[in-house]
Length: 163
Image 1 (spheres, rainbow, N blue to C red):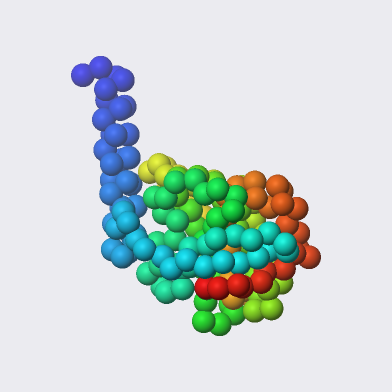
Image 2 (cartoon, rainbow, N blue to C red):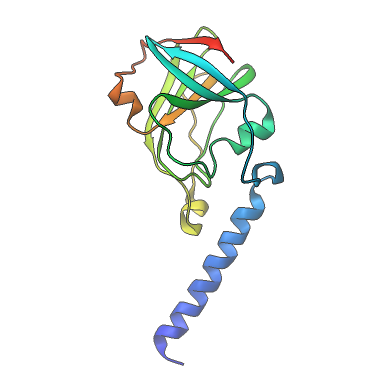
């Protein structure tokens, strides 16, 4: 066996094990390729967005996994029963996101921009949870670049039209 093969075989086996471990660690409800989310409408400042609503634990776990890129007029809003410190991660995402945490009054408590996806086995092993600086009742995920494109700042506000 050549020295190159001796190196590649263990690396390939390790990558396969890491990939299987990553897939097995995802709860079964989130492995489905097609999950239906209720739809709603929100406003940030004067900008209207159509959102998928993740208002149950299985929907929040699944999130935007395996979905394609979002247009700037769409997003996903995570809705919780009470304010708290809620973290998100980018497991099995296909594109980068901006994330915005809002309190119960629609005020922004935290913004993260251009968070890269965790798709490969190596990325999955190092995939970090994004933890906000304050208690939130809602988290909005939008396409990367949204925050800059629409000048979203800590002074921006969320208004729920229907969710």
